[in-house]
Image (tube, rainbow, N blue to C red; front, side, top):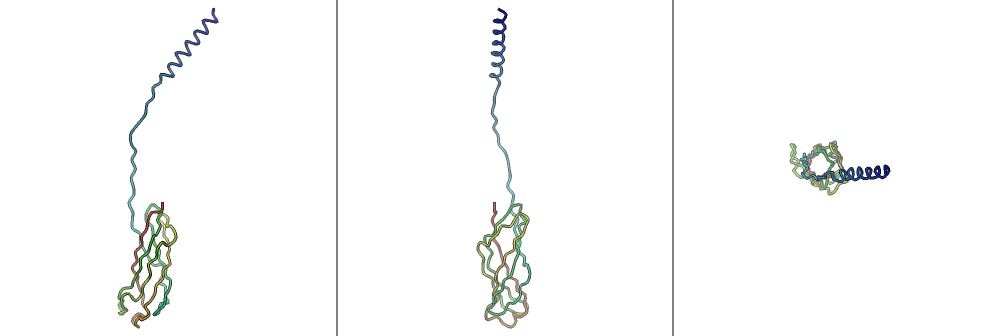
Length: 147
């Protein structure tokens, strides 16, 4: 009889304990999170060095660097054509030109710089006033995030 009472008591304890565990409340949560985007900072194009050797009808290579002041990597998708301005010595505007470049290779890391090689050509009919001159070619670059 004692054994039977102990078994009944054990079953009752399990049933009550199991019922408590089963009766535990559950719930769900809902709401939202919030993040913000950054803004872009424009890059700067700078000459690496003044390439020399231009003369009428000749083409030389020159290099520029493009910086990436942004907190994300970028890819340069194009660099515009450039044309020289009228010089103080009277060398005509447009005497030296550089062709546009599409899809130059490479990615510029966040906070880094990239170096690009371009070609400059002096017109075949350049005047004597163009001798010993330094020509600045205004350029623009298009960049996209490289995520």
